[in-house]
Length: 356
Image (cartoon, rainbow, N blue to C red; front, side):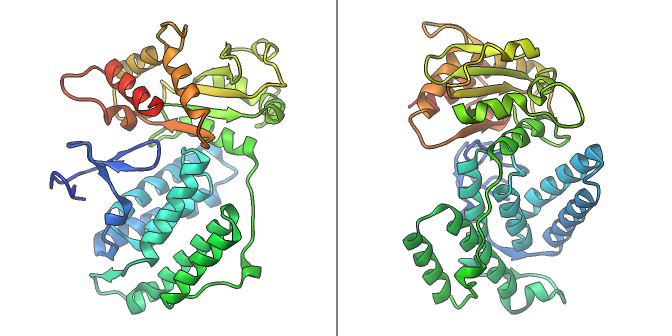
């Protein structure tokens, strides 16, 4: 894709914690709405590869290594095709965000899913190839109807009735099909399962989160600490803490507890809300291990707020917002990195941008 600001060709945009894309050269934010929705031989083949890998993942659901490998490939192919404007990939990427496949906070994931669906049905779909695919007949009307339906189902889950009806009316005026309200179902994933999906994504073979803050309410804490799967006797949070750094910060008084063993869980007050901080130094990242260590040190550094001053500043800022989770990759730090600036300083700039 080409940056609309510096006009440079971008192999891969920076993917920021709030779902925005940014140019790695000029650091300007690229709007999803600026994507030209079109079908080409290249992006169609890439979208087909994404679907093939996703189907393989579903078929290998009982073989976790194979499932994770196929799903990672599906997401990466889908991202690539979506950046090139393929409508099927844009819809699938929206589906991935909506259903918790992506390591992004709940609020951001729903907002992004809505944007990807809207990108397909609000404009036109240009077909720049010879094809007999029925999805692309009549300017991709079938795909636009599918995207509009998914969008309305998503809005129905999270918005008030008047907002939903307004959005439905807009879609009807475009001549697109809308479902009867009785067809729109509401389903909510378990908050605890969503949280562990994010933490488990740290083991992705393609690209994984670098660090994040996940809000755990008092009535959820017992379920999080006691969550056991994979036929193991130890709580899953302890198993994960063997691979990534996990620290619980009391949302009320700022005290914290690093998790390494089951005994560390005993001191957590189950009547209090917490922020679960994780740092994934061993995951797959587009920066060196040494750079990861520098970012971790910057977040852990002490000042008047004590140890983990950077994390505490972020907690203070996000506790005043409506967002539940903040999940970052190295791209969020690279957004503030320059040739003459250290990773530690760039991390501080990222924290400043959140704490503003």
